[in-house]
Amino acid sequence: MNEALQSLATTVRLMEPAQSRLRLRFGLSCAQRVAHLLEDPRATAGVATLQGFLEGDGSDVALEAARREVEAVARSHPGSTSIDGTAHAAVSATHAVADALAGRALDAASYAAYAAVYAYSGSAVTDPSAYDEEFRWQVAELARLSASDPGAER
Image (cartoon, rainbow, N blue to C red; front, side, top):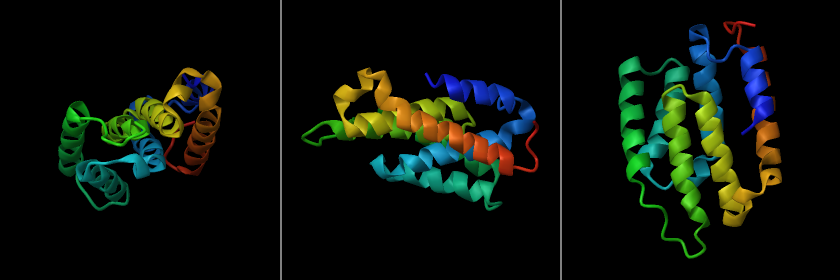
């Protein structure tokens, strides 16, 4: 668990209803960070749908449809057939996209961090220090987004 991120999320009141856009923006950033690990085009399309929504090109209906589809993909993802197994990170990356689409930004961050570490080395996921770089990036990214969002509450 990224305790520094949890603390910052509390400070910026990330879970408040008024912060839904910030949650979506941060979830998108996390999903984009692991988008190269996605194997299913529907998950990649989900990232594009969320980005388009945040840019004003999309509706709540489209966002909800993408969320449902990517959640179904994530639940049924078979893993990877790669010989080294590290591409199983695609499963966690897909869950990160689904959570980002749903506005579950902290869950998206958790899945994205796991995917990034797993892609590096499957055995690294049990080493807490393997997450340090991702956790630092997540805190910096949420801080950047919350500072640049004129509608964000402080």
